[in-house]
Image 1 (cartoon, helix red, strand yellow):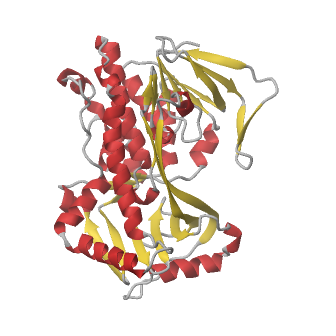
Image 2: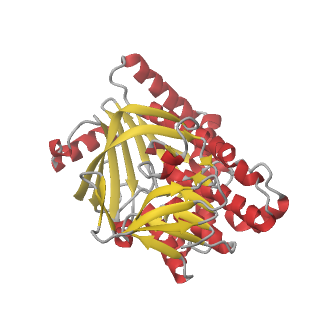
Amino acid sequence: MRTQVGIVGGGPAGMVLSHLLHLRGIESVVLELRSRQVVETTVRAGVLEHGTAELLRQTGVGERMDREGAVHHGVNLQFGGRRHRLDFPELTGGRKIWVYGQQEVVKDLYAARLQEGGQIIFEAAATGLRDLDTPTPKIRFRRGAQLDPEAGEIRFHADAEEEEITCDFVAGCDGYFGVSRSYIPEDVRKEHVRTYPFGWFGILVEGPPSTEELIYALHERGFALVSTRSPEIQRLYFQCDPHDDVDNWPDERIWEELQARLETDEGWTLKKGRIFQKDIVQMRSFICEPMQHGRLFLAGDAAHIVPPTGAKGMNLAVADVRVLASGLTEFYTSGDNAILDAYSETCLRRVWKASRFSWWMTSMLHRFHDEDDFRYRLQLAELDYVTSSRAASTSLAENYVGLPMEPAPGDTANNRGRAASAST
């Protein structure tokens, strides 16, 4: 099989990249480990920065987002039993966020690519990469793959034969556990890791929303978050021991814990519903440097992970592939490698800023129970400052709705004009 860009991973990073390349006349083949049905029905987070939503709209895949997604004009910070709202448009010159599930974004991208004859091979696992330092890198893969989530293993049909894609470039968009990152040599690759001493106990609830906009709460017992996935499905979290067991938390105990952490002086009450999913997520930060090697380029979770407190994961993936798409466009148009050569440098500036913001939000809103009351009082003071100072509120709002995209070194005015559909 031959294509121009081989994309490992059919999540947001891989599919946005494939879509952008198609609009610029560049062919790609996408390998996705999971089935289409699994991807489209697995409920995932979906806070879209202003620029991410604009990109989807400008490139023709934002119609359903505009129709079914929820526009949020702010967030609520709660501490000391009081709730404080930050007005994003007022603080950022009109920018806002959209709440639209990641699985819905990918569903729209699948439909658009398949309608245009795009090649997406579902249930296909990349087994290796080779010739990354040559003009014709290759991706080895097998069809009929199935992921066993309990064992953490990929299983293949007995008759699955190894196939190969020859391409000009490889985009590793296969997440933290994918194979792509391992093909950046160990003596070149540096991985930065921060593991936090707590996790998030998350639930999916069938029921009405409790709030029109997200609530981030700091309580003596720990952090809590109220968010939404759709008018019928709500997502709630509370800080927990990452080694806890979901079986220790019957439904009534969960509701009691959430209500205790979210209670206000005004007597606000959380709306309940049928809990149909429970899980515990470990909080960590991870960044791989560099994000490229030869003709391999990493994007999204394959290169970096941030705590979900700042709502940056999917947005960083989209930011990565915007840069990559611009670089590939310039290469195929003029033969200029400047944007591709600067890919890591350009992306990592944004990644580190987003990681700083996510770390700051996480540190401000979670209890560190191994420390004394001094830290907790500092957190309350910082929240008081953030919600009473316009400068501090503006800083949080600017980061939350998304920092402006920086032009890549070597990105010419001519190329930016061709890539107008991928800019904010």
